[in-house]
Image (cartoon, rainbow, N blue to C red; front, side, top):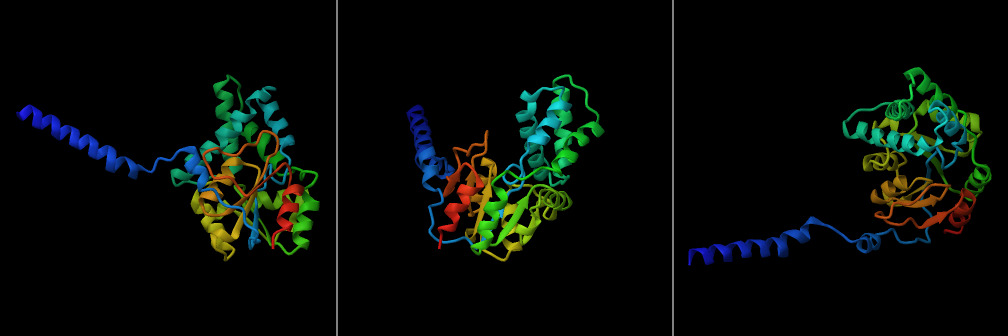
Length: 267
């Protein structure tokens, strides 16, 4: 009799867990995740925020420099970039901060060491910090930015690069005149895609999150913005993909010209 009671109690607990606790865990299928996606809007955002590296600036020269530092192993470039992004987030989670370029140099040393390639700290920094500050804009960028500015949009850059770094980048690429503000995560000490970074940028510009739209060529950046209740426009540069488990942005095009054409139609 006692055994039956114990069995009944166990089943009751198990059924209770399945029926009441499990739903509160918040697991969602991909369809449920997609259903929370930001809906298309016919209204203009108050501020357009732009990621910089790859979104506006062509990283080809830096890739060549990094590939050369890795002994010509261009196949290691994606690994280097994801390692750099990984450790920028490790730094943020650990409540630390280092210049994004310095993290990139450290990531380059790590990737090199794992493939028996010798790179000194100075060589790693030279391979990244020099080229990244003199990157050219993608061909369509200047005309698209001018078109957006002419139609009344407020343009703000928002980057993981340092304040000094992005100022130098814009001066060398001829982009300074297009932007009302240049925001760097250096001022908050947390890298995108941490939600705090997007919240800080919105406060800095005096607008609500839903009044912000991020233009970026990185799926992780768009995901972070949408999770922070921003709107998004994705530029699908070669090799760039949206994160399947994040909401879809309202705009997704191959270049900034096509993104600008859609933004201009908003009222």
